[in-house]
Length: 245
Image 1 (tube, helix red, strand yellow):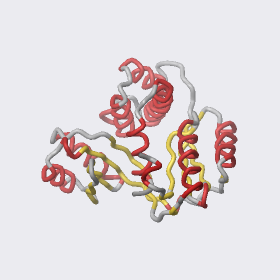
Image 2 (cartoon, one colour; image 1 turned 90 degrees about the vertical axis):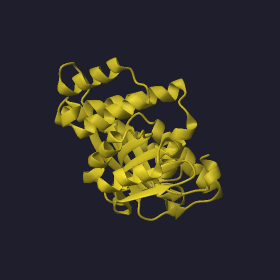
Image 3 (tube, helix red, strand yellow; image 1 turned 60 degrees about the horizontal axis):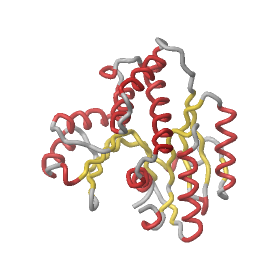
Image 4 (cartoon, helix red, strand yellow; image 1 turned 120 degrees about the vertical axis):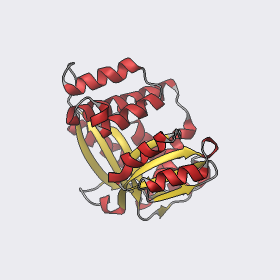
């Protein structure tokens, strides 16, 4: 198990303390605001906004928070202008790090990200240095006990899913980015609940880390995810399962 699904597991297993939930809310509000600013405040006509709202609801974000974030994006309320950026670099053991940022201060963001990577024995690289190692995919996770396997397979594959994988507790559905909305809609029409649904980045190859390097990578990923200017972070690191359980 490696890459995106490993770090998704961290988020699902950790639970949300008050402090962590606050950071999650901040990132979700940024995403809702930017999605609304880019393509309007109607979730039915804005897939990115619709996905962001669903993610916010899954974290039990109050409806008022969601509505305020949309209005800030559409200009109905005064809000911060967030800019999107991609940062790439390397962590312990030379593992690739791909970072998506939403920030109101790019100078602060790049300085903080560079400091976090450097402190962990990594470094910030040039644009494109690791992007080629990742592929953008639609990603939907369904808990196994919540669904009939045949119904899930039929709905997902008929709607255009590339693959349906399973582990001890979940089904993972992979799609091309352009087919993500169609597959998610098909699953929703079958009243199949999911615990995660997003456009994400999957590593095409992995860097096997052990011992101290693996521990450093776990700490690095957690620190990056806690950074206010970091929206999402991905790695091709493959580390021992017990470090993220």
